[in-house]
Every structure is written in C-alpha cells, then in structure tokens.
Image 1 (cartoon, one colour):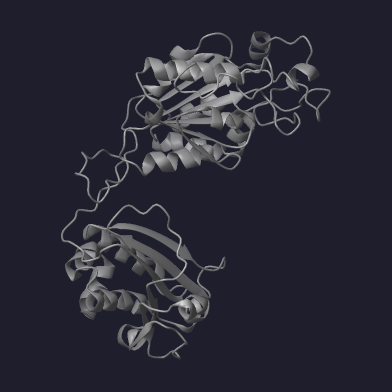
Image 2: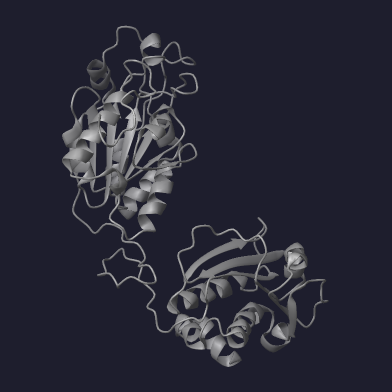
Length: 418
C-alpha cells in the first residue's frame, strides 16, 4: 500500500472512475519524490471528497464549490514548498467557476483535478454545467438540452499555465505529474461515467464514444510562461525576489515590545475610516516584527451605522483569529460604542480608549477618555485613536506607524496629528 494512503480500499462505488484518479495521483506524487507531508489536499462536497480520511497528506475539506478558493488562500498565504492539490467534481467546478478562473488568471501555484462524471453523483444524478447535450440524467431523462461549458478552454483563456483533459481510463499519472511540476495554475479534467447514475441512465454508453460525441477533446495545453503568483513574505522571513505579480513584503524597521498576544478592537461609525486605521495599525505591527490578523464588521448598507475592526497582534504565528474578550478597545463614536458594548462590559482588565463625547460604560477595563473627534474630526477620529494607542501603550514603536503610513494621505493626516 502507498505511503500516501491509510487504506487501499477507497469509499467509492465499485467501478467508479474516482478510484483511478486517486491511484494515478498517488503514483504521480511518488514519481515526483514527494512525501505525504509535502502535500496539502483540498476537497469539497461530492463523492471525491469522502476519501479525505484515506490520505496521509494534509487535508482540508470545504464547502461545495469552494475548494479552489480555499486552496488559493493556502497557496497565497504560505512561503512553504508544499504541493497543493485540489479535488473537485463537475458540480463543484461549475458552482465555483469564478474561483477557478480567478486562480487561473492570477496563476496561483496549485493543481486542480476535476472529476468530471458529468452529473451530481452524490445528490442523485442531476445535471451540472459540464453535462453534455443529449446526456440523460434523472431530471433530463430525454437527454440534456443544453451544451456543456468547455472548462479547459475557459481556464486556458483565463491564463492557466497548464491545462489537460484525459479520458479517465488506465494510467494517466504522467499527465498529473506534468501538472504537479507546473510553476503556476494547472488543471486536469478527468472524464468519467458515474456507475450509479450515468451508466444507469445511459445504458451501453462508452466513455470514449461519449467524449468524442460531446466534443470533449482530450489533450494538453501549456500557456505562455509567466510568473506564478507569489505570496507575502512572513514577518521573519528574508525578502523574496520580486515578480510582476508579487505582493511586496513589508520590511521590518524596528521591534515591538509585545510579549504574547494582544486582541484589539476599534469601534466607530461607517465612513469614518475605521477599517483604514485598523489596516494601518496592522501594517505598522508587521513593520515592528509582529504577526497580525485583521477582520472588519459593518452593516450591509455601506456608509451607515457602525464599523468595527478586530486586530490581533502576536509575537508568534496566529493560528486562530477569534476574539472572546479584547485586551484593548478604541471607541470613537456612539455607533461604535453601541456595537461593542457587550465586549466592553465583559472586560475585567485591559484598556478602553473612549472619545470624550461618549458616556463611560460599566467595564473592568481601565478607561482613558480622549478627544479623538474634537482633535481630528469625524473622518480622522479612528486614525487619531490608533495614534493615541501607539503613543500611550508603547506596544508598537511610533517609527513603525510612521513608516507604514509613508507618503500616503494617511501619512499626511498622521503628521498633522502628531
């Protein structure tokens, strides 16, 4: 048995083409000299995904149609050399088609393997966007009246580095191997017939005949070489060589005094720069050598009501963003106070920076009343709050905040407030 599988018995119907996809993938991984922990396998809802527990690799199981988005996030957020593989069905591929096209357009370094059995096998045999015209399904017993998307052509046009379509019979591990060796986005569409629904509704149909009749042309297409998407550098890694698609790393300019983790919340009114102030603080924290996550919350109707930003700072990698009770809260408006009042009331320590126009709530935190709005105006109150936090807490050197702001409009406003 392969070191990539815990059990050679896969949880698929007898004769299902998914067996061959798994075994050819394993063969390609072994031929590439990879070990299980070199690989991240991302799947979503569908028959293909129930084999997660059979793999000894890292596995991530997500929502239907979202596997490429999850995999792209992993690829774009890591500087490791993990080989990222996506398994998805034809249903998930058409549900998440935009994710696929954007990953191809960005040329994200991952390999997507589409199990195209031309219907939704897990949910009863309904047609998908890749079901060819004339193919019979449980809800189109007279034959599908619509033609299918040409997924390979769409992905090629979007800018993928490597695209292939294979008949899911025999050994196609060499094609998967070439996809895995591609620097950038690669997609392999594997044609199959679902033995439970496809074969039942289309008796006597042969896979090669179906592919030919439907215009599912097998082949391999390599696109013009261009740089694959490169992720951010982590705070403690060396700068990477830039390419046209790089996100430029933030250079560390000084050291934070933070030991451990700090959960910070900024609350104000929508349209008053709360999210921009939080992003500036996040960039400054990275420039001070910290790890950072940031999350924004605001109503669906943009520009009205509250705006809240959660910023987590840590001197070690952040494995979970969630904030149960904040350590620091900065409130600049009545909207922000109302939205974050429950958090503030739960605080039994930490610090609350509060605009002087607001009532002091019941809290166990130290309360520091400041004149954010009077000093900076509504549009810059959150920025003033961040500056006050930096100046009074000493957690982030002021140098880092100034460097993060640079010559931007925020930098000009910051200079006026200092």
